[in-house]
Length: 335
Image (tube, rainbow, N blue to C red):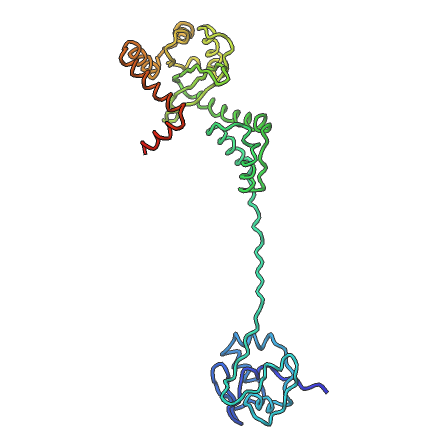
């Protein structure tokens, strides 16, 4: 016949004498211990953690034959009835004199915490594309930057949901669209502007192509504005007529501002000055920086002593550029 099962509440109490038991956790003494109701109330109220871990989550265990036998086990009586030996019997060990009864350790719970992976935030592709275009324009980045492996990895690390546009999409779609918006905004400002100053610059690229850049300066909404109006390749010879034709086409045909131009600033080259003054019939102003540079060049050209000094300085610089050892020693001396 299977032994009667007894509440696990008894593991938290020990016998004081035949009439009393006490709580192992707080030494509270109880007289009426024929049933476990009051004992359970005490544990639940005074020791909620022990109650939840050892009582609520524990099943009944096969005890000794009666409650009195359990008390005998707790008190170490020699005439006690042995408990059934199973996996739970080690909780009720007979103790020798002088031993302190121990509260069974709380049952450990395996706390499993699941942290869901944070989803990548949604992307406003239009805003990101616009920022990409601005980076290309402001930092003078080549369009092939979107094909660079490192830049692609960096973009994916920021947000894998963003699809980086290809070089073709940049050049054939995004840049033309952004240019149209910028052109429209510029035209709206110029339509309400009465006076515009123009600056021209002729320059040659590293690939030996010749270009003309026109920059405009005006007041809009009480603020000074400077915008690059156009950069156009000049394929013909730089005669006054050819330069004047290009300038007129940009200012009159493309932007309709030729009549609003009150002054044109250029370098001191004869061809561009003639194009502005004689052909376009606009007020001309020489570039101060270019004029100052001409003054310095003329001053050096007429001073033999200064020319020899400059030649010596150039020779010294050339020597250190040719010799790594000399450059290293010079750096050590400078430090």
